Amino acid sequence: MKKKYLIVGAGFAGAVLAERLARKGNSMITIIDEREHLGGNSYTETDEETGVTVHKYGPHIFNTNNKAVWDYVCSFCEMMYYRNRVKIVYKGNVYSMPINLHTINQFFGKALNPKEARLFIDGLADKTITNPANFEEQALSFIGEDLYRAFFYGYTKKQWGCEPTELAASILKRLPVRFNYDDNYYGSIYQGIPRDGFTAIFEKMLDHPAIEVRLNERFDAGYDTKEYDHIFYTGAIDAFFNYKYGRLGYRTVYFERGVDEGDYQGNPVINYADEAIPYTRVHEHKHFTPWENFDKTVYFKEYSKETTPDDIPYYPKRLAEDMGKLEKYQQKVAKLSNYTFLGRLATYQYMNMDHVIEEALKLSERF
Ligand code: FAD
Ligand code: UDP
Image (cartoon, helix red, strand yellow):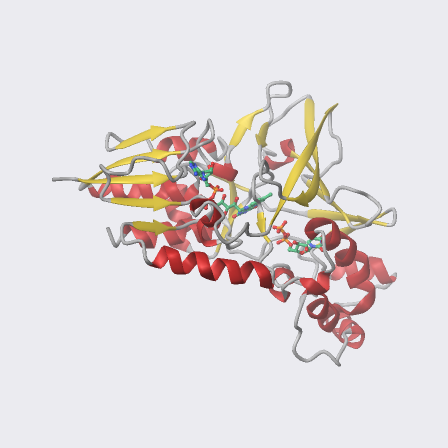
């Protein structure tokens, strides 16, 4: 008898798991998603007005150090060479981001070489902070007051809606500081963007006779699960328990769309550091596919705000109060024998696509 599995959510977590389980040949899989499309937040679609492939939930660039994950994803698409080079505007000047030798030299009006820059920044770093307890302390101990105030303070306040002293130091650690002219946003070995967009990957993954896909279908407490041997849940952990212990904190983002002729900003992503500018960044999606040509262009101003019950949860805040609630939810999950929780919402973690894929690949080996 083949096992019957239900997978809730058709983002990378759910789709990879479905694909792996189906290819083992010993199960029948139903994968549902409350959205009308596959792909979760990695979904891409063709913009009708311009023809450009847009990342509906914000720009997604695939990057990883894990060769197995890279090879796996590349087996479903033609992955194109792509390096994300981000600019940042501060007080009317344009700089390179993440902070690199060009940013340092431009910001301080110098022409330092790598060794000189290292010494110079070391001199600015706050040496009194030996064990950084939060985002701000992490930044000050590393790059000092001036660079922190210019490139991180305002942006981070807009992005997270709180003082950087309230945020975990780990959020800043996602960004490197480089003492050379390397302006590649990510440090990963493997990076790219799929030629036909991310959605095509999901269509290929789930195209299997053992997989039934049901879109526009929501899982909740009343969902009939009798026929399934096991349920894999990739939705929000607090929603699963009907917010019994309260809602976990998330920031959400929303976009203001604009269309122009030709090239709007000359780069895929430009960040805006000044607190007075209400959006955090502007992304112009045709620059994510430099191998294509379009007459028109579509761009999005990205704003960040607190998540209300009607919004899509994006960035887990993981403040102390959230972590207390999370622990209670996790204790309840541990008591469920025929459920597995995976993916960024079910684990309440900031996970990149490669992390989610790695987790799902590992999990599939146990079933
Ligand atoms: P999701 O993609 O969120 O999928 C979960 C799915 O479950 C959704 O489709 C949802 O509709 C469905 N669902 C939830 N609850 C229910 C329910 N009750 N019933 C039915 N369906 C349900 N990662 C990178 O590697 N590179 C990037 O450049 C990058 N950029 C990002 C930019 C932004 C703005 C954001 C927010 C994230 C970015 N990420 C990036 C992270 C990436 O989006 C995630 O790693 C990935 O989407 C996680 O996949 P997932 O399947 O866990 O979750
Ligand atoms: N950040 C910043 N200025 C920037 C870019 C990032 O202050 O120009 C901060 C911000 O708090 C962000 C964090 O650094 O949340 C990590 O950056 P990353 O690009 O990883 O953010 P993401 O948007 O992916 O969460």
